[in-house]
View 1 (cartoon, rainbow, N blue to C red):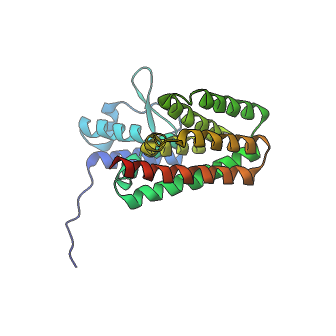
View 2: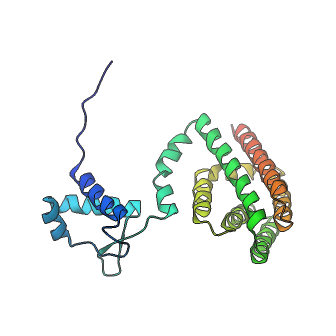
View 3: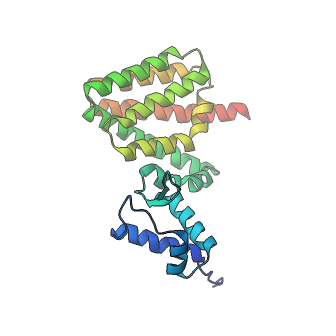
Length: 237
């Protein structure tokens, strides 16, 4: 067996971890202003660069936010912030065909579940908003760029039904990671028209409160998008 030398952790990572642990334990409550840089330097016996890098790390993770007066305050990480940390890994995964297929299948399973959940939870107001998103998609059929935006809007509106912030954040993340799939697939002849017809089926199932039909309509829709995406890739070669 071969081993490599163990790297020592950087000082700012230790500082960030201690502050993070204080936040998680509740010793530092959300909204609390953190001590000044000088106080933190003295408490941790480190230099200013280490403190600043630690605060930047915590800010990227969502544990710290910068207030209007420029002082760092304790924050609560959001689902969006957590998923941002996975963005780099997702893009590495997308660099291989196997990884790309894995994310496509993950999106299909996730969004089919979202459609089912929407059919179970949608209020009359939710259905009205989804109907408006569908109509916007229909009206943009002759403009591919606009159709792509309203296509995303329809799926986003669906994910927001029920008010679960994790669903919305996951949808945004997957839409970003797989944006090229939508862009390429919609430029294959007939795909936009088929996508609109699928959106109509999904809307009808949600409006009729038919969870199984909503699941099936979304599953079929994304299977077709995946197939047409690979067709578009082959045509472009």
